[in-house]
Length: 372
Image 1 (cartoon, rainbow, N blue to C red):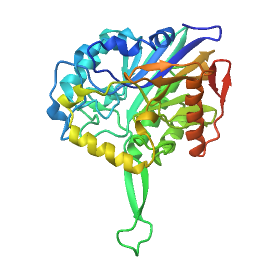
Image 2 (cartoon, one colour):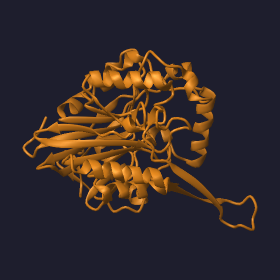
Image 3 (tube, helix red, strand yellow):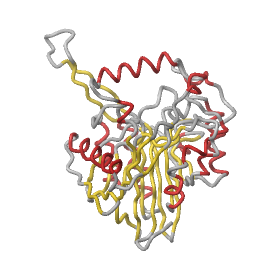
Image 4 (tube, rainbow, N blue to C red):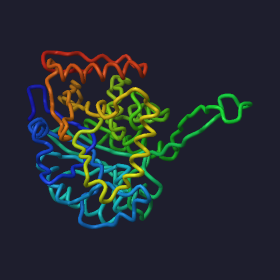
């Protein structure tokens, strides 16, 4: 609910519920979600009883059992991004069916659609006479998942990888790796933001992007895209996909959360009914080799609810509510003055500093405030 300073937009990380009692995944966090005036999340799958896993290629498809869908309206979500690298796992029928379900329940959908125009279409939600706009894009989708003219999919902000030999005269030596944004996609992004800017008071942009499980590391293209979004008129950037928290940057007085991590993401035996266990095991081993000595599962349990306080048509305060994912894959919020809350705050501060950013996280009473 709104407070004396206006109202609150709450934003969380990746969502993929796959369990017999789906509502239970939010039993510790539901109060914080429904109390917000607008609640935003990133949905990893297209819940539907339609579609075919043949759309997803050799890795298989993430679970999409439609019985889990009801947990989303139950938890109070008002806006959902479907700009995910798994949105197309079950094909166009499942995607469009899921979008229809969300809209029938009054949930605004951004980032995907029946064609490129729908995928790039903004969502606008009004509270207390203030209009809040949402846009969402994906950088990490498989071939064929991006929307186009007369083609379903996600809104693209694609990036290309460039490899250059560090020592050209040493065949087989290590390479320098850089990433570069697709110029046409970047121009479309800034055009979308510029068009929406005059229609709303506050403008939030979500990106599904970045590097899996690599502590504090960002791909080269990410700051380029984030800064371009702010320069075009975005008031905050909300990132998803890496499955761990990533640094928080302040750019031109605006907050950029490069990844909010997992929030409500089940991982259990239901996955292997449609997803390749062999593919997943090899991918996990590869990431573990890139991160020797680290417990990737433990780091992935750090999460957060970002609370944007809005008054007078502007973001007046950015608050981070620490969250720890428990052994049942359920998000559990903690006050900042608890040991668990301090640990999440310290982790965010550490990875942000490692990325060369000087963002300050103030602990005020039971809250973590981002100094903007």
